[in-house]
Structure formats: structure tokens, C-alpha cells
Length: 244
Image (cartoon, rainbow, N blue to C red):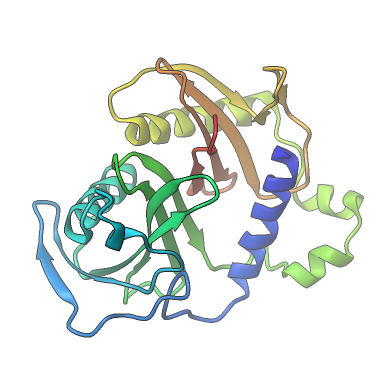
């Protein structure tokens, strides 16, 4: 399953690199009268988009829009260590009645950086950080998704050779720093290249790509999966799998 997720991430990365600007996230429309939030972090605006499934009218206790955006802003600021001045954050509340998960998801726009797409996901009841993605909409070595589809594995390996131990070790230092900012208070007990399999071993199957996957387990037993760009070491995604 992890390999399929990684392939999907690669395809999504390439598709995003070739896409046009989007003005909304998760199918939601911006509400009228956007709020401006003065934060210790920076000044940013936020609004709530349309939910696919909303159970707040049943009296369930969840984080308010204002509480959620503060948590999300801190999440983004701490992981990327970057100012949020001028940023607009659109949040969408959703309840998944199949697995009883309530989340606030969000889409972050920086007017001055139209080639950047950032999304996040937090638990709507606890505020726990679940996922953060950061997509630079730029082609990889000038190769489009359509071109990669038509290339053989040997051709792709010429462009994206398998990383050696030294490169993996260098990327691990970057991943450790990202993971510590994501996890906040816990300590890392395991950090490996690849994906964690059900048997506890690391799956290091290589797919020719500019993306490199790692997994991290902390002292509380939490698993997070981190994908970074090999060349730039930029974060592509942090993911906390549901049900782990």
C-alpha cells in the first residue's frame, strides 16, 4: 500500500507541476466578509469553505474556526519557519461518518507565490497535527507527467538515479529536523528511508523519482511519513496514517 501511495504522490506532484492556478480548496467557496486575524506569528486572513459533511449542528464539540486556524498557523510557521504575513488560509470542516473522524483541512495561498500550493489537516477535536503538504508547481528537470509516462525505467534511472548511502544520510538530517518540528514535544526513536511495512521492516523499493520517502516513529509510538525533494531537500508532505 505504501508503494502505491508513493507512486500516487509522485503523480500528484507532477500533475500539480503542470496545473493551472486554483482559487478554492476541497470544493469550498470563500465566504463573504473574510476575517483578518492578528496573530503573534504574523498577520494573515482566513475564511471557511463549504463542507462535504458537517455534523456540528448535532452539538458535537469541536474546535471553532478561530481555534483551528490558530493551530494551523502555528503548525505551518513551526514546520517551515516562515512568516505568514499576507497569507490567506481557507479551512473546511468535515466529518467522516464511516470512521468517526472529524477534521479541519485547509488550503494556504500566498499571493506573491502562485507556484506554491500548501495544504494541511488537523484533528478537529484534539488539534493534533495529521498532515501537511507543500507542492512547488515547477517541472522536474523539465520533464512533464506525460513525458514520464512514456519513458522506460532505464531512461528514468538516468535522470533520477537511486540515492547512495551518503545522500540518504544527508536527507535524513533534513527529515529529522522536519519531524522534530512536526512532533513538537516527543523524541524520535526510529527514522529510516522508505516506508514501514506491516512486519516492521522498511520497504526501500526504489522508484526513479525526485521524491524520497522516509518514516519516523517517536517515543509515543506515533508514525509519520515524510517525503522530501532530493535535489532541494524541500518538504513535499508529512502524513500521519489513520489507524496507526
